[in-house]
Length: 349
Image (cartoon, rainbow, N blue to C red):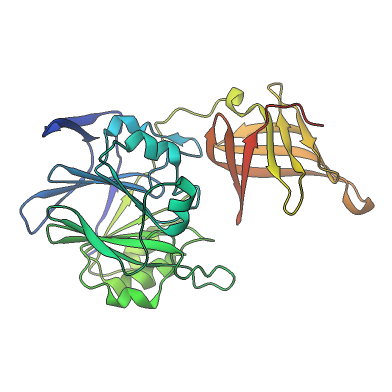
């Protein structure tokens, strides 16, 4: 019978141990799996699509990101990684700040072509590639792409199958059920994304799990998705649902204040919005929208204003989820649309 476990990763407490001349830090509450080698595999579901693995003193990070909405992590508390794998270049998977915090001169960095080009460093891995990270740990690169019309990305993104001493872990990245899954072979643990529009619906996750037949399934890359149907639909698969971390500092209004701009396609013009500490807002180079005020609520920015396009005016409110915030960049999402802004140091009209 299916069993659901709820996992809370308490990243405030870390176990530090010595391996050679370096210190390894890892969450003191993590999943532990026995492997055929007799050595334990530790798995930390950090948040969203960020994962960490520790096996026989080797630490691998997959898609480390410092912030998602109100959730943040200081990766310096993990110590340095032996290897970092990036599935693709979407900002909720690729974070230079996290990579910098986790990297030493000896850290191996792998990613798909776009990720490596964006970072300006690393080793490009393409679908079909394979290799070894350290003794007893190998990887194989598998396809990750969408099948829904208008979102196909065949060949651009990576999924990874890691072999930890004979224990095989599939990290899917952004994908939907694809034919190639039938050739993956035995999978002990699968991480499948459940969050449209870029990954799977719950029913698609069930379909993918039925193709792969993992012993254990951990859905990840989800927000408010109702995952209860997974355990009801899958028989003979242990479903582990990691609890989203909620113990991180909330975003402060002061951090969002300033002028946030983005380039207008096919022009030299920038446009955006100014957010002021008193709650007022101002449009920047936008002829048809006039922002008047803003709020910060539950990890989202709510903008209020007036639409004045096509000779008709009307009040509106836009709720934009904060995916990432740094001192000089802001990434917002509304439905399928992801908007990337940079902070302007100049006063713009």
